[in-house]
Length: 197
Length: 169
Image 1 (cartoon, chains in turn red, purple):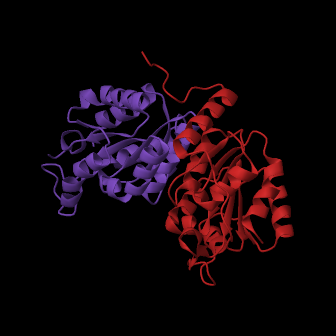
Image 2 (tube, chains in turn blue, yellow):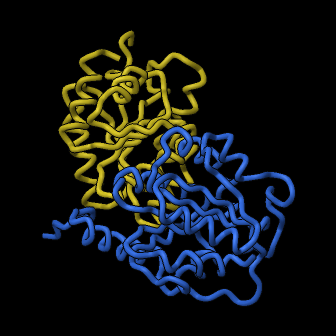
Image 3 (cartoon, one colour):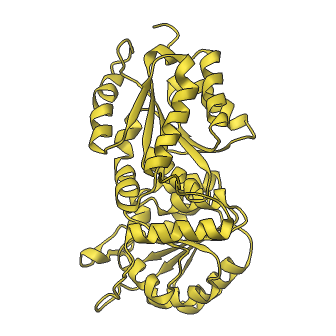
């Protein structure tokens, strides 16, 4: 199963959802598959889930999607206990687990035959966490997650992507401004300071 | 911590419009956490790592909620990566309230490192801070910090000194 095929399966469901996407090739692929002002291109590793949880808690009427990776989740595992303690029904988390650090050439991550992120999430209190291993199962899980109420946590076991990555044009700061203006416009709220004189 | 200080903190946060709280407990702030958890005016999410709390607050801010992260000053060290990445790379701010463990007069040996490293780490992260040493200045300090956060869209820290946190100083 290729991650980009999974992202292509998620894209048709995107209307006004807010999407937090991990760094690296995942964000490049998502930007190509689904150009959407409601996407936040996050930087760093580990904090995408709590960022999404904070956003979903602030806007409980709005679906928030997190597109994360195995290396990222492993870096800040206590994000999962926060999710277990305060789950958000409108939060949909997809963890693309290719068992390697893809951006640095493919060194194995702890999930390469050893650690099980779905099981760790369940142990942290994310009761509905599940793992899928083929595209049809992913499509069914994604459809259910994105069309029903409730916290979703889906680990998709994918292959390491090969070949040149699609290039994302939108940078972090530009993406943030687009994202904030999109949230402001659709929620009719003010986030950015506007007193310029 | 004196009840009057707890009331200034809780009241100051409410007056400033803070609705979202995350925390990892420290003994100086212990009375505040129980109060926040029971207060329906706040959405409160406890965490097990300060970096998680920083990211939670940034997410809440993105959704339009004023947020605060309460954490011991050792948490500044723990959350360095989230503070740098979210603040400097992405542009997401968090308001932190931090007890000045290791301040002059603090007793435990373990707190010495917290006190010695906090300000240099904040300065390395370019995070402006205010140290409050008079409980009558707490509400104003909260307002000032949130105004600066709004004007800069960057983190700001309110450090609570020993004078306001310790009863047996």
